[in-house]
Length: 440
Image (cartoon, rainbow, N blue to C red; front, side, top):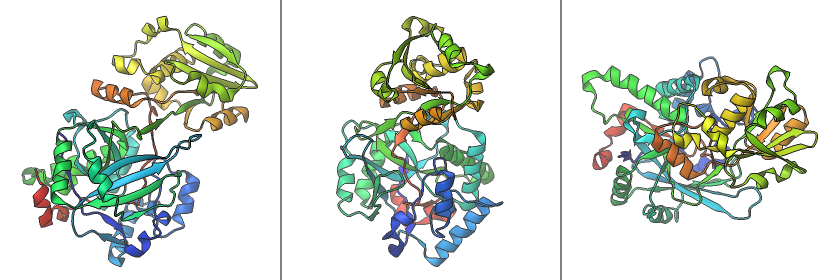
């Protein structure tokens, strides 16, 4: 089902690649203001292309790209290939080293309605337009989105492991503490096998919905402009994606907690508890740091911290779940976060409906558990709702149901990084004779 193609990657030249840590950057939607300012100080850091600044930010990125290409800062590999990308990482409190195995290539930019690339969250138009504008001006992809295919036989991993015996380069430690390693496969027969395996698979978009939808927007504009000359083989029909196997145990999803910055109508902590009681059983605890363990593995259970020693485990009363009447699928209704958004944000706090909740400024999405507690203690928030992580099985079931999750439901860890590999979608890209070997 999914058509993939090898790419002639653009990468930092040999000399700069020896210090690749200096030039990689976080993705545009996770980089903090402080991180941005520090990275902007390096004139060759990839952030100048992925998150450009200035009145004409996209124009500045295009000019800088042209300069880097002319000066040899970035060089294009001679032959197309599939780029193997491994990320080695540890989770907090664990000594185990995980290795998320995947590969980067071009995938045809399928419309959502084609049900080849499946989404699990909605996008914000402003962010989509920002990414589409940057793509239009540069015709260059600065970071890969993250997609998931399922292969229980793990057939492609053997080829990836072999390629990793001769890596192109690696980071010592990226901004999130992971070690990133890049290699390339340029063997025609192996690349064809990758294509054959993916041709029988759907792809779930794990991360990068705005960048992917930006590619869809740009492709649609180019297709209209091409008119009858459109062939479908143009480079701008494709999108740079990092593909990993959903069957792998090293695919990790971390929880994203809900921090209530303000309580509507001057609601007190006691009144909030009173509003929750009809829907949840409420158990008082002593230590807020016990909350993740007390809710682990328990459906519809959450930690609640109100500060000043007010620590609670709350769990939905099973008989009230039938009240959840949002027009969505059973798979979405079964999620912990849907329960939280309906029975806490809507029923207890009065923020009615998914769209109103998306627009509400009174909630913040925080991944760091201690940060949630400290922000309540400092008076920056009124309440912290601690959640369990979404499982890969839940992600797959929701995607195949055709629905989307509540906002900020998944945090696939670690994030891919910018600057490791760039690709062009200019018309000239598919003119390389080697590409004819891989066309469907």
